[in-house]
Length: 125
Image (cartoon, rainbow, N blue to C red; front, side):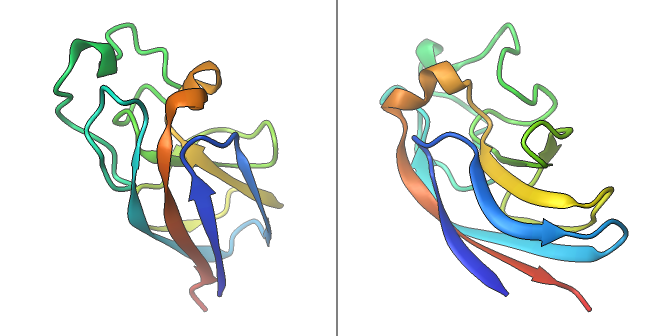
């Protein structure tokens, strides 16, 4: 099992974990982060209800529009297809490559993010 932190204000985190296609992995995350002073603090599952208009994304400009703003997301490789991770995910890697994790927020708006997640990744076998 590998453990590390994902910082809300950081760019994509290269976890250094080499995934193997077809192998099943389990990702868990604890902690809180906030994508702006205008947003509620949330866990890795993201925020469903924002309390301020400045914290909403009506044009779906976040990297992965299909899931909540502030959700932990991932990809395999530096330019891989994005997928939701949240607090607890068991998945089979679609391809070989390094796991990257980060917040579902635009890179140009990471400057005002605060908090971090403690993440664990383990093979399920």
